[in-house]
Length: 505
Ligand SMILES: [Zn+2]
Ligand SMILES: [Zn+2]
Image (tube, protein in one colour):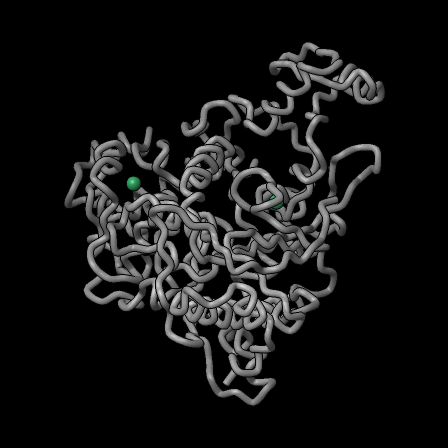
């Protein structure tokens, strides 16, 4: 079990030659932007009156001030790269630019939809936004942040434009589901002849092709202007060729690939290379937990409660998933195997490629000898899951590191941390992932559908408090920037003062 801790804030923030903090307006109330996941294109109606619940803590102290929510419109099916571009320009305004190199490499037009007015045109480091992503929505925000740091959106885009990044059930490092939906564990990004991805791909192509003659109300908004897939852009023969083997969905510029562990490894490298950029962004990831150890001697998990839903079946399968069926092997498993080679391990031949098992775990060897080829070198966090994403993948990009993540004790019967950092006069450091596990919640317990549960109420309440705290800290840091000669200890004392009541006014 990872330790629970509350690190103390230090006025020093990670900086390098490229990063310069920018002053902020005092006590800004930055809006919160919501980004949905794969195949999700619901609306505020389905999410419920979450804006009221997000501001519930303000109402409690009699404040009429509200934090507004912006519902981002991005493609439900495009790749994480393309969705990140769509997210940026839909907020800022202008024509979506997918990048010259990217568009050439992936065979689509460089430019997409034009937004004559952005959803938040003043978005900048001085007027930052908070972000909340569900599932692949969180991965999309991480991608956009990497691209901002790498200069993809030009010199005016600054890392501090993202005040907080909050993710719920996001598969940062991929998920087994990515392989199931393509019907193959070894050919990604190519699909099996018949798979969920194949059916979705046919639907996408047919709807896109017929969109000029179909009522707009029945055609989902795929944001695929750059793909030129309508009957005005391509012949019927081209359509048949795409139905047979799609250039779009069976490539690496599509979301089925982005769900795989290989794609997660690529994103991890990208995130790590841009992380040194620093910045004043605060991170929270909410980890849905729906399973428990099926046997204390083994790492495998099973759902806590039986339910007649596909989610229960998926969760059960994921809890005992055989990771070494995937080719090439996911890096987290390959690394464990290579570490094992330096130790006293036995090798068992296996028709799927073999697996190493500690010579000291004779019961596991016996288990494999009986035909069970489970990857026993992995810990239980690879088998714990929410029905769609394994727990370790919901934490954050990359491996755990003392300086970049803090894991809290799991929350039971609530989705709100039991304390407020500012009320405890300790302020969290930017740049650190705060990982909050919510027990008894599956992939859709918190969002995007509103069930009115206690879990959902406490989630929005706690999120509202957290955003309030970050706004207050950012404003104080702005003061720190404006008076660079102020003694660091005095500044820290100011940061620890009780600022919450003022922030609500
Ligand atoms: Zn693309
Ligand atoms: Zn961690």
